[in-house]
Image (tube, rainbow, N blue to C red; front, side, top):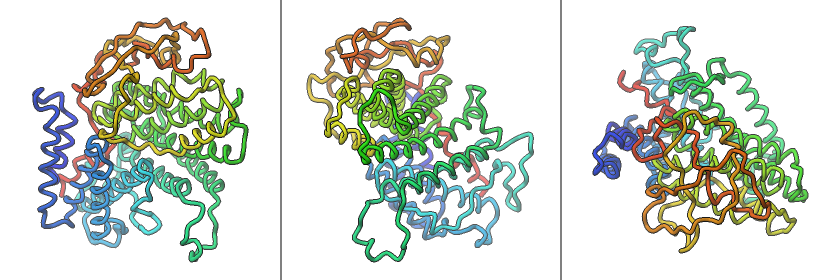
Length: 507
């Protein structure tokens, strides 16, 4: 059963290795078979049963067209985890180190997934650490975890994957508290019966969250604080990016809340100069986008999971809000928003529902006039709703654009490996009329729009056209030719999951 669940993800990730006739159905076939075995399983408290639910939930993210299936897998897995005591300290159990580490890692994997869903679905988390006593996983590679003891890790061979995973867990612990503060209603019927006299001071909690994130960043070991670029999924640079993207994601949510508080305080909406809150929100959003752009340039996006979609979408939402508040930021960071949308296009290959997210972002960018800021109340509400909105993955059952609406253009596969990434990220394009395109029932990923290459020095001739810059995305891409992860023929991995590490083979 658990083997089938893992096979579902492996088969779907390696569609390029399958016959063309099976690429679209193999993963789904194993997915249905694994669910059948889940339903008839007699020992639901077996840790392998919980592991199977975890992997099925990861597969369902962004693919099944419904958030309900992901939530049901996670809810069942969390319920069984509580029943079998995964949330309790392993010191209470007389088990061997291998079993204890498997239980510990599985709990934290469920916790991070549940917290991510709490963000994307805007719901309360199922797991609250205030009621759990489990320890963090041991920061050692699998080879040093024996049945009798856990051996020390050699200093000249640092455990990159596990060190990054544990640091990400620490950040997720901060994220859980930030989400609780953001999503908590101001007044509830239960408040009158609450035994807690401490009222929630969201501003103070956000400041403490920022301080904790800074502490985590300062305490990062040198081997996961690397800035030197190495195009490998096992490199120090890649694992450093893993930690950095989660750090900046939480900072983006905090900065976005500061924007909301600024609007609620009656601050002037649209000005040329950006306020501190706007500048900070813009900075962390752009940093997130550029980090993923760098990973894409190195061919490492295929090792990112669905959480990366939430990171990029949150950054794009926040960036649009900043562009609305400041005309200077609107002009300066248009290429960064284009980059975010293009990165989402890459993720639409393993996660089909991401295509709709990209379409919605393009529509938002085209309909919100960020060149002519107004102080209207309706615009203030629009920004507030945009800032509060979660990065929810829409279902494919949702209606597409009405007939005649311009669909968003796709990038060509021809790429120049020598292209300077910093130059491309700042390219501007000449305003042109949107092409008259109308896609039918086939998905956008099956189409390719031929664009005219633009000069690096191209600029806007008119600032009155607020959507022309999105009409044509420049054909140059920041990916080298040997990277094909923007197509359906790429092998996608999941190095972000520290459960796919073979420790179960030692049971």
